[in-house]
Image (tube, rainbow, N blue to C red; front, top):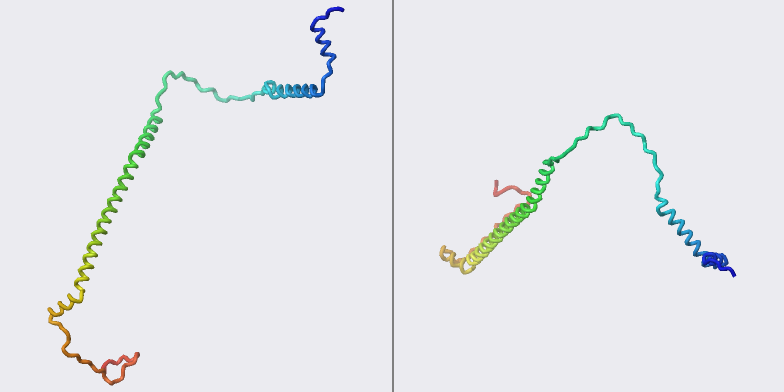
Amino acid sequence: MATASRSAWMNAWENDLVLSDAALRSAARVTARTRSTRYYGREATARLPQPEPEVLRTEAPPELKVVTRRRPRWGAILVALAFAGLLLGVSVVVPMLVTAAATSVEQAVGELEAREQALTTAASTLSARISTLSSPERVTEQAIQLGLGPAQSVHYLQAGTGTAASGGDTTVAGR
């Protein structure tokens, strides 16, 4: 028997193989995956060159200057400093103003409470004085000092027997 090379033997063996249905499905999946990778991969990202539109220049380009030193932008620096000052002023001055306003309101409330207390005290003092001045014993004592006393005799007045004036009568005592 002639000795065959190993690669010839392997090729003959592979040609005699019969693939199963599962192997055929697997091979189909691999082929589809390879095709999609080629489509969505690097090969699909290649772009066609686009023709550049023709630009007609009517004016000459400006002259270029070489700038070796950049000048500071004083306007931007001043705006930044003003903003920082405003922020500092708002963050320091506004709380101080609010505190001062709250303190003045508290002081006014304290003064009003003290005034209310004084008025309440005065009202209670006056009420006690009124009570003492209007007591029946005090009124009797004052009447005796003024020479007033109980009546010695009581006289009753008799009303006249004349006709009483009607509501619409404007005549007064014979006039």
